[in-house]
Structures are given as C-alpha cells and as structure tokens.
Length: 180
Figure 1 (tube, one colour):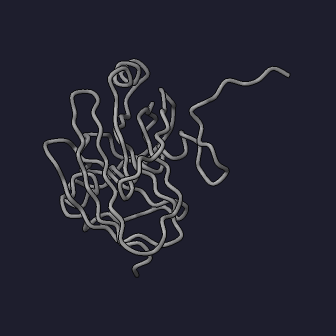
Figure 2: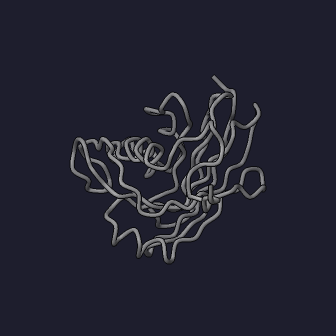
C-alpha cells in the first residue's frame, strides 16, 4: 500500500475534523452582534453557547488590538483560529494565498492546522456581525486554526495574531482555567 500524503486533518484522536470544528466555531461565532464573542472587547461573552467537547476562542473583526479575559473549564481542549473565512471555494483559495498567523500559549508557539476550502454547514443567528443569513447555512471554510490540548489549571496568556483578506487580527486573552 502506498504512503498517503499528509492531510490538513487534525493529528490526534481527540481533535475534530475541519468540517466539524468549523461548523462548531461558525455556529458559535454567528451569535447576535450585541453578545457576539468575536466582536466582544472584554471577554464577557466568551462562555456563551460553548459546545461540550471543545472550548472555542475568537480572534476579532479587525480594527486594532483586543484584550479579553475568559474563564475556561479545566478539561477542555481549545480551538482558536489565527485567521479564518466562511465563503466559497474561490474566495477561500484567494484568502489562503495570503493568510498567515500565529497562536501563542504562555509564549509557546502552537501548531496551526491549515484548512483549505472545506464544505461545512452551520447555524447562523439573526443579527450576526457577518451578515450571514439566519438558520442553516451551507458554506465553504478555510483558515489557520490552533487546536490546543486542555491547559493546566491556573492563569494563562493566549495570543492570537493573523492576517488574511485585508484583515489584521491581534487578540490577547487572559485565560483562567479551572475557574467555576
């Protein structure tokens, strides 16, 4: 049997496939503008509607640096996009040509999974900041995502920096892991 080339799929059995994690992330990220975790500048909405199997973190909508504080359960792996897009195949192909980013946990560079144009379906809510239709949305997603094993209890710093499609992301989280 011939060796298979590496794929952009996650590398451990605890991780989700790109279509699955993008569906979770975009469903979470399309909350209404007033309580949206991506447009949130303090972290007060980071806990809203988190899925049971992974803790989602957000970059920003661009427009300058953002600092947030977020309480995270001790047993959850983290998923944070350095930069991402939900659109169509052509837009994703163009976006990924210039996409770059990094995610640091306590100063340590985290491995980024490069996700090329991947079809997925998510649930968008009314009033989301992306202008996505409300309800079930079939999309194509792409981006650079960090999948981080559950951090130890205590305080951690997570930095998300990325650029793509003319948008610059610069977010710093103070994570309080294991806090109720």
